[in-house]
Image (tube, rainbow over all chains, first blue to last red; front, side, top):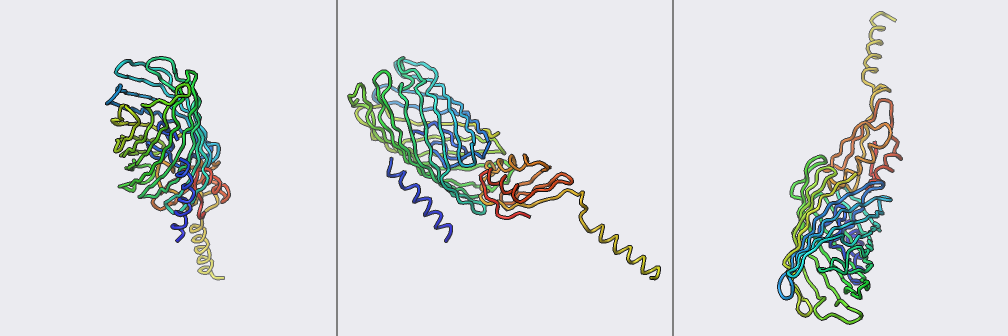
Length: 284
Length: 97
């Protein structure tokens, strides 16, 4: 009965997030999913360092585009419920017309655990998070590496972790602003649902593996240039993403692939072929 | 008291001393922790408890939800200190003995 009440409470807390409609595609969130945020925070005084290598490929109408954006991210636990962090990426872009690379957009982030219920061998959690993207990437070169704008994203994540089973859900909204060159990327909305299983109940000090399946829905409003909507921008996409975690004590390797199952893009745009990500996480 | 009676008393006394834990022996505590679901997350407990003065070593059983703390000789661990360390690691202490 208690378990059911806890589950209902978590769902009730997560529900507003679904109504509000994060740009967390490059975020590493402690022991959470790979392509979406989770509710975990690092312990008080703990430091988490993540080296990530997200990669995406687009092809089809218009220009094809390959993007590799390796990053280093540092998170620090102010309390057991509250963490702050910074992410610094470097971006390589290869389009059919031009290629280039440079500093990506630096992101400052924070996450606060709103609620937690500890049970023997299990935890329910819910957290709110926010990310501030700074315009550190060049928005003038070809290809363009960033939007040149300072953008704010926020959302809510909830989840359940047990020895065997996992589930997470999250929703986020990215509020994008106009950059120096007059381009305003469209606001973005994200909804995610994740299920996972640990096939072998390994003990502390043993290698541990968890497999998960994420469903990631994204929607973008149309971009604007000097106030005018751009026809061939925006739309919605749904991805199915098999991912894994492998951990040993304070080391984790996480990775996965996002495969599009539905793309409803405005006008003529290249489709997402796939996105991949590999992360190495270390706790101090 | 007869010689046999004295010898019996001495034997009983020696047996009692041998069976009791001497004050200088290392104390061992068992902490039952709720929320322990994965080995990666449990590293925070190791960090927090190993930072407590006097803690010599610890063992974590995720499947049983039990953390066993062995102290250095003469050192003790209070319930409050253990509870705070577990809380700061992001978990809840259910019992301490």
